[in-house]
Length: 496
Image 1 (cartoon, one colour):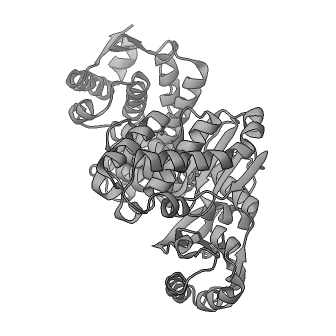
Image 2 (tube, rainbow, N blue to C red; image 1 turned 180 degrees about the vertical axis):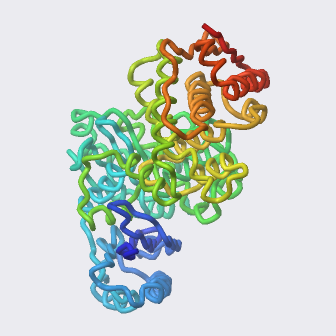
């Protein structure tokens, strides 16, 4: 087999440096190594905007380590970019040759809007926006990028001098008070005000946060049990109050906040609160896509003709040697069953869940590549933990739950799964399709076979003659009826 081309991106941010090595797997990044170091370069800028010796030393030590990992790589397969601190440092011309020598490759200092474009490129290739306009906000160490777009190219984009490192150093170097937070938010709002009118006029449908600050805020909100997911201004104000009451981020002991973000969390939180207030944002979701992903897709000049999640599902079938014929049988039947169950749901909701069920069917047997015994558990583990381009972590968890329920004991699922009708419909649809297709040959159900639901009661209407002719399947359906008694649903077979 021909080895996959290996591409490397190096993101030299104002807060952290990242090295990511990917294989170009049919236009998708298959990450084989990801190294991150908190360099805090922006923290080394003095009053004259010169990088001090300590920050230069930290940067060179990190770049030397990256350089060792990249020995033997071809220059055309490595792209290193530097962002805001490299842009603003007055002594960067003296420092840059040393940095390139340590890394062993040229370093591009990219403009703020180019940074914004690359961030958007990473998001639009990995987040399923379904044609909706996205406002993407990326708070870095020294700058914040704001981008609106829905297609391959952004519509408007801007980079402003707001960062978690610079704002933390400027406003939160001592005991933190409410006055400090208000001063930081006011300063950030005055910067964002420059673009707010244009952005509000343009408009957007969904708001996404990328990179470390958004991830940290979302994690803390979830771990503090303020919300299951997402970021709102109300929840951020609660976090700010916790920090003010404690006097520092460290003393606030916020659940879910990693130690390396303690010193810069307050600054990033203030910038994010300012963005919400100035742009009247109601809610934000976090996405893992970032500058490094945009660099990869920019590398290969990928087009957007297909949904990346579809490509990922197909590639996982290849990787785990899935029987595509069996996956197709199970997929078609499970989608049919889901449609039967979901006649009262909105068309868009049914379309979305039909895709989830179809992808679950495409991948329901990937665990067999590990072991046949308990393969559904292996499948669920892979789907929950693998790198799956295009799928959010929430979507991966959803696929994992659906495929875990394809066979076996339902008691544990009843104890852990939320009572979301479409989720349980999806579990039943896939579960019955797997049961009915277990002979692994093409077949047709008798006409007028319908899977229905009334409140919490599922029923399968199916020909009595067909059941008589297929006693093994008939017995399996009877056992299935017993299994559903362990849940808050019931299932019965109605012979017709």
